Image 1 (cartoon, rainbow, N blue to C red):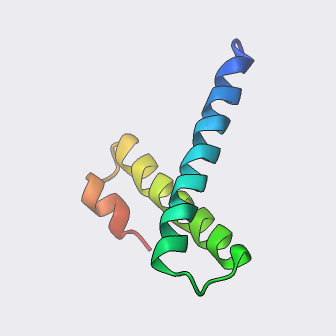
Image 2: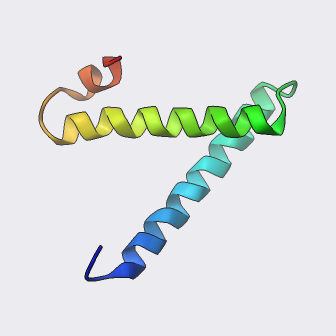
Length: 70
């Protein structure tokens, strides 16, 4: 990413898109939640998912174990 800053921009755009899609799904499932709560839930879900995937990628755990970490 240091040699090609455009990669960071593409990655960020992808993360924003995933966040927006997840937020839209949550809004349909939980229409009573405020926009703020939907954004926070989307952030938490994306962050925790990525944490589990990182554990798996490092080889410290299986994918299932990565998602079971506290």
